[in-house]
Image (cartoon, rainbow, N blue to C red; front, side, top):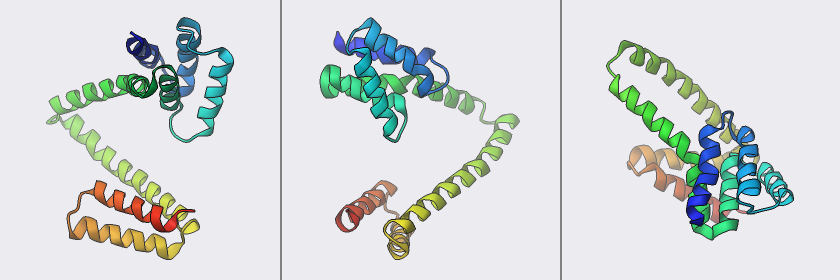
Length: 177
């Protein structure tokens, strides 16, 4: 029963809330503090402060923490799933509609405009990562990791997930502080 309650406590605010994490926090507080009484308002405020101090979306961090606090690892997994499920469902519906009308001129035109925007955003992300790499490990380490990754991706057709894991392993072994 606790797992179902956790699911509802995070699914309902995320399905009816509009405006992202900050907009649904009061809805989650109402469920967690008011409805189920899993934590006090003060404990919730401390959880919110900690969540705001960490990177990534606030709603998923809070769901993971509160779910774990209430019902351990299964509770954390259920709460995080309930948080992302509304967006996942909406994406699946949108993809279904796009696939259904994939031959439409309007959908094809929209796709032609989306691709360049994504390319620019990805380029900005790569530039940002490159700058952080130069400031952290240094220019030669960053260029070396990038070159090895490019060779592995294009020369050996190794799956990108393995290349990322190799990069993480290299960083953990040789670049860790």
